Amino acid sequence: MDKTTAPLVSAIALNAIFGNDPKFSHRLIGTLGSAEAVFALSERERLELFGPYNRFAAQIGTAALEAAQAEFERLSARGFQFLDIFNPAYPATLRECPDAPLLLYVRSATAAAELFGRRPAVAIVGTRDQSYYGRECCQRIVRALSEAPARPLVVSGLALGVDITAHAAALDGGLPTVGVSPVGVDDVYPRRHAPFVERMCATPGCALVTDYPPGTVPTAFNFLRRNRIIAGLAGATVLVESRIKGGGMITARLAAGYGRDVFAVPGRIDDLRSQGCNLLLREQVAAPVTSPEALPVALGLGRLQRNRTADLGEAVRRRFDAALPAAEVERLADLAVRIHGNRGVCFDELCRDTGLDYAAVASAAGLLEEEGFICVDLLQRCTINIKNA
Image (cartoon, rainbow, N blue to C red; front, side):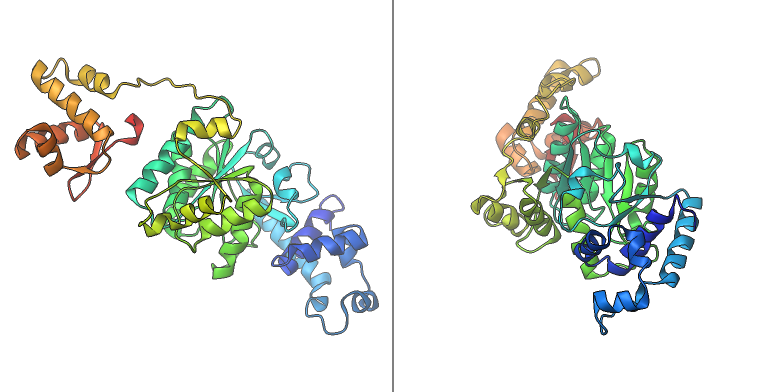
């Protein structure tokens, strides 16, 4: 074994053995002085340290180091990177956690040494069963972060719903994003997100990280272990939408336990997908996100620097002024403003509020949707496009 890589290979081997109990790895290294020293123990010393019936004692030996060396060579050849907890580039906020993983596997086009510590990190998490309200809030929160003077790193878990919305919004807003995976670095879960992960990992400053060895399959426990990395990487965690029980709630409580700031988006009292957020607010574990624009200020990222036109009505007028009669343009502008102030309003309600007939509302909504000002769902409910909110 190369002396320069021996400490890292020893950390890879220890992580494979004690990954589910990183605190034990830390105690071992604290007692013996290094990861290498653990594998230098004689059989008698192992028995004295672990006792005769410890199932891990037999795993500490030459075979484990050889397997770790082979894994290191195989993954390095494929461009994957490693950060052990003794590496100065290991995320400082994660290192502070008592159950920090001994090792992180990293997949990124950016050198691992440049991924963390250069900007603040914010975790954005929530339910897989995301509502339109949750998606819109998530996108608006990330967009507000992208407009802050201190543009943060967005961290999440690559899951369906809020997680992937946060990652995608970060890329769209020019923010770096890190996805924490519940499987090995050589795989993606869920598989449907593989194309997105390819794009993410090819973007400078972005990465997929995990503490799971290659070949690890997803189990329920994997997600709990993954969530503590999300909470540990970030200085603050934002829970967008969650039921009482869910991964987002676990991440938020872990973040609070680490002494990090926690925020939650308030929801309707009868909405199951907001009960978790409302509970954290009631318990005063989290601070409310009452305005996406106020969140960067609360996080110490500075006030927003907006470059887009604030007046939606004026934007609609500019777009249609040369193409339609003035009265029609004003009708479109009025409709856009009404939709902006009434999320999820349906065609029938717009007919009632504007005095227009159904055909006129449907035609106007079609024009606004075609130009990207609004979104219309299958139930003909209208919501302003997040880019124009």
